[in-house]
Structures are given as structure tokens and as C-alpha cells.
Image 1 (tube, rainbow, N blue to C red):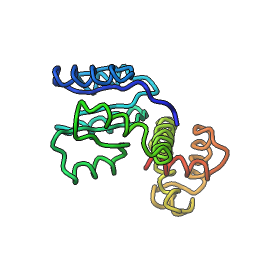
Image 2: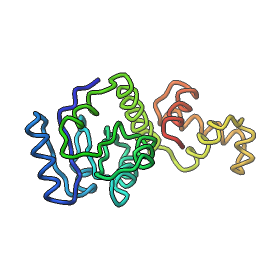
Image 3: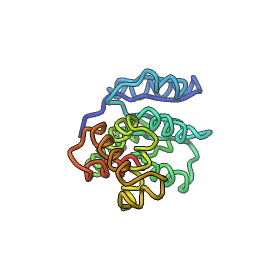
Image 4: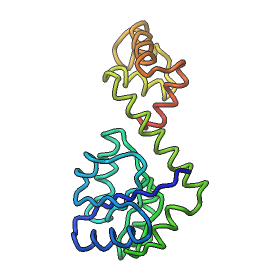
Length: 198
């Protein structure tokens, strides 16, 4: 797994942000502090672990913006009074860990470095999703519809009926789609669709 040494902190409270930044900096991390999610998204670089305050829907906003921009980062939300339900929900959304004590440098380091095999899978899946989304942006609305129906196992004839077009037109959309996605086969296009959750 990559050795993540840059931590982006997204925290609107200046005092908390400074406290966390100082603790991580003292632990040998390069820290990039951000006040707002928008600021982070506009300036972010590859190789960051994102530490984000899990308040006021921040995690959901970050995930939405990452999806929209076809980006992915390992995310560690934090909250001082997190419930088990909150932690589980964050993990199901793709967080690589959760911290309920900050600025606890040991917890941050443990989350980043623990369970390397599982972290590697999460990071690889996140990257694949972001890559798939960035490719699917190239498709027209109709090509995306064709891909969606293909991923549901429908034939050209059934897709044509659903969309009110001929099976031959469906074939043309499929060919254009495969060309735009720069894939060698329909199976590869379907794999991208699965990663992108279309």
C-alpha cells in the first residue's frame, strides 16, 4: 500500500484545525489544512488521506463532490461523540476508519497503517470507481442508458423497446460507447459500469 504521509484536514473551526495540524505535524506528517470542502476539492492532490469533521453532513458532501469530480481519497471522519451507528454508516459509505478522539495522533496513525490488506482493497476499489466515473462522463445520456440496461442483462432488442429505438441503433450506441471508453469488449464496459454504480 502507498505510504500516505500527507494528511488533508477539513475542519471549519480554526482552533480544532490548528490543534490537529500541530499534532500531526509533530508526528512527521505533512499536513494541508482546509476550512471548507470546496477549497479542498479545488486544490487537492493525489496521495492525500483526508481527515474530516463528521458534522453537519460533511462526509456526505465530500463524497458527493468527489463522485461529481471523479476523484477518490482515503477518508477518515472524526467526531468526539460518535455513536456506533454513525461510525458504521461512515464505514459503509467507504471511510477507511473512524476516529472519536482528536488530536490523538496514535489513532490517526493506527487507522492509516492498520489492516494493510483491507486498506489496500478499499483504496483500490475507490480508485477504480473514480477511474470508471471519469470515463463514463464521456458518454452521452443515451449511451449511458444503453450501458445501464446492458448491465441489467438486457438484449439489444429489449433495450431498443425500452428506449423506443431500433436494435440497430442500440448496436451503434454500444459501438460508440465502447470506443469512447477505450475498452476492448462489452465485458470491460460492464465492469466500468459496475464500478461507477450507474
